[in-house]
Image (cartoon, rainbow, N blue to C red; front, top):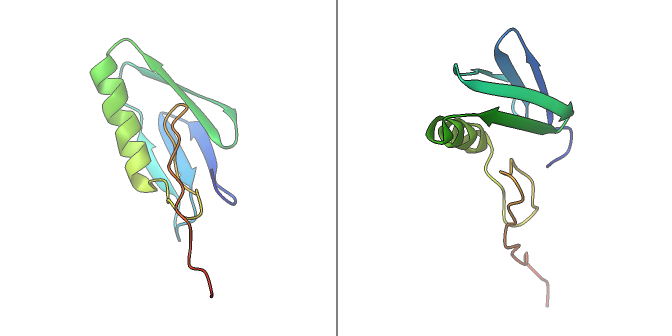
Length: 89
């Protein structure tokens, strides 16, 4: 979730454009299937739950959700408690 965040998959590599100065490319481990239903959603599936959750955590670590604007990489139906920003009195 963010402005212009995109994901592409090909040749065993997951390429992420998440607002950094470069694309982040990650090799998909054996035993994990990756599909991209839309440009900003990644669907991971596999038999080994430990391997799957570790890989999802590595993806999330690239751009964790930000509590003020809500931008970042979310896992499943995760909700982040939003914080109120500065207010002028």
